[in-house]
Length: 411
Length: 225
Image 1 (tube, rainbow over the protein chains, first blue to last red):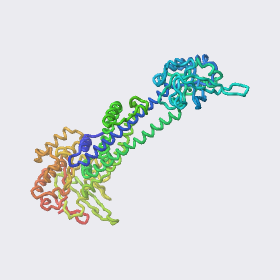
Image 2: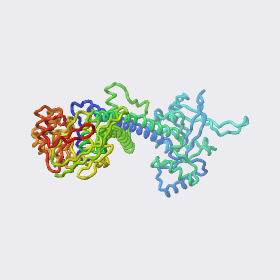
Image 3: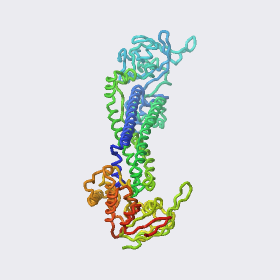
Image 4: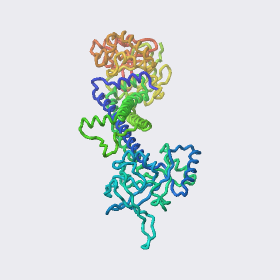
């Protein structure tokens, strides 16, 4: 508890006199340093959260949340999964059959290994990642031997809408010359460009119902795709299915390297930016140390009139912490306001500086993403406060150890 | 009158300077009654300030006892010493008595706020005392806006706000001219009352001659003149 006498001294130390200009400057720099550090951390974390959400949502537009493999009868398994979901109250959007087949694609003289994904025409038409990113041809040209192909893959193969490609299946056909891979030809109906390199560079999409010949004997590559209402439940749902002897993996398993990289990047960025706050906190230490040095005689007087050692610690600890807390609050407000308006700020800065700060064609995002995550803000505030509290302790202890006799006699 | 208001028995205090022991006080014995102003004379280094620091509980003796109202206060712990100083002891120094961030009113009130935690009453008391000390127009002035004599008057005002039983003054007029010295002494004289002892360490013989009792410190011991 702070006594009225301690509070009176704290108030005066927080508002130094004109002749103590250096203390005022250090206080202002401590306040601004902590505030800008916290704001920077919040802004960077918000943008990274925004990027992460955007990337993952794009990824999930193309990928199922859960993929079930090694099964025989699709309909039987679908009913089984639906029953499990009903029992566990798991909400899902759809459960579909699909194929993911590695194959060699040949066009003129160019060969390229690719991933062929066979899916229902309805799934293809409703896939927003695809239907919003068709750059050539028509989305309706799907099925009846018409396929959709990634933009980078089409460029590599030198094929465009209307051209034909040959696909060599891994399934072998017996001929008088021995076993040879089966060959199928498809016409390119559309080209998509999602902005996700892996998809644009490797994927060919075809209709599951009109490519039956190609999909014959492809049981090993048959999957059940499950889309959940909440993709973050994927690992939990996978565990539920595995407990029911349904072999499956989640989108997180499928993108483990990518997912872990995002997480590591985020954590490293957090640690690096926390250093800004630590550096700013040194201002508090130096400011308080100068304050203690300047006020040595006055601390001695306070001790002679009955201030306790703990009371002196409180005065300097609260003075330092108040600067840190105010700086943290300022930083949180600045960070949130900046994060909410980051797109307007980007446009403003781009206009003023005549440079494109966030080129859409590089990031495939029409605007700068930003997602404010309250637990992260609370964590940042907590860390900033902890750092300022720790910074205030050392000068406060030093102040409390001042010997009134020595200070009043010799200083 | 309480004859043994403050009783010192076999009080000793030494300091070490470059490994050499300097014995400041040697088995000092002294008994003082209340309701008087006592001056403590002696050359520099004779131990006047050391004795005041021991009596005001800012320092601890090597041996011996200090009995105040028959209570041994030389053996109490640091927290008890702080409470004793807050409630019963006031100290006035030669200079550097005031807190530069506080006005004259606040400088006086702070001692009472520290004791009672009652800001309103402390300011009222402080304003009254400063008025009595002729500083009514200076209550909102900061120390740097006050003359040396005014600063000492504010310091004495702070020393009496908690109605202490013991007031110690270490060369209170050391930095003042004769006119201001007389003024300060007159104020100190007015503070004499029952259940209070005022002890002034000084070089000033004129000031000492006006006190009720003169003590001289030499060779680590005290003599009554």
